[in-house]
Length: 382
Image (tube, rainbow, N blue to C red; front, side, top):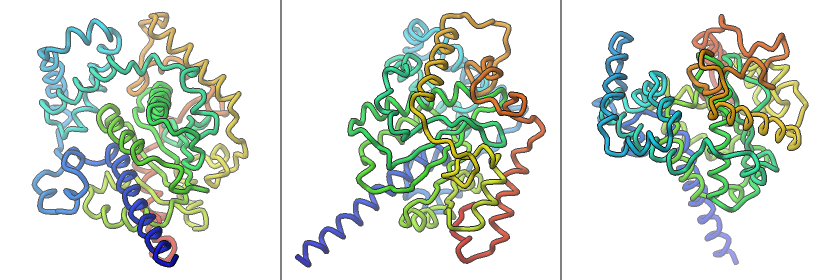
């Protein structure tokens, strides 16, 4: 019996390690440099390799030239005629300056790599048809509130996806991925003008290894890495399992500071957490589960109505019912609707204040963390 217990503990440890690697892969797919993504985890552990291929800095004057090179280059690919025929408006949107810029940044401004990545995304969208997924197609996956777009934004006006791994209610990898794609598309479509990134708030309360499939986690990393580059602005892991943090501490020193700053480990029993959350979110709107004052819980009926409204707006957009003269935001394909969006802030319906400075907010959060100096607060990752 004792030997069985030891074997079980070893199995649990190996499973948790594999899961941690998988979670890291998801975060890596959204926030790390292209070389780190392409060569895998152990690449980040070799500073000599990283030194030879750190992020490329391209001046604002040179960026339009590279964007146009990608746009012209991708027209020569054999698959483009078929993509144009089947995607139509999608093709035009994905060849916008903003879209191409995201793919270039994800590939360190390498034109050929960005072309290939963009072509891969277009082929995937042509076959998977994420824009055609509707609420009724994924509603069973949403019943427990395991992933949903929040009714509030952060101080930078970014849409927020709330995730609760303990609420996993499906064993189908295909169904889970389909719902994730639906949520990503919805979050992107609801971004306000001049914003193209979202926030993930991941609540690990009640989490256990039985909640997550390694296969699904790996497929999630694949989808996010290949088809949603430069979309994550911040990921907050709230009360994560203890084995997450030591692993991240090993990895973090080998990442670019800008990359590492996109992932934060926060704990509700740390007094510093409240100050950090207040620096990034309006506390009156933030859910109480994350230390805010908003006591509202996930309501499937209300959320379904919101999603169906968004679906209707999406149909109107793809049917050409939106005014062609309406300016579009950087991140949203129907940002013309955000003025009447149900997520508008309570103070006059304005989604964000233009004077808010991203660097100032992030600097304030890091200042709060640094002031703690050590002890329990040292667990909070900048």
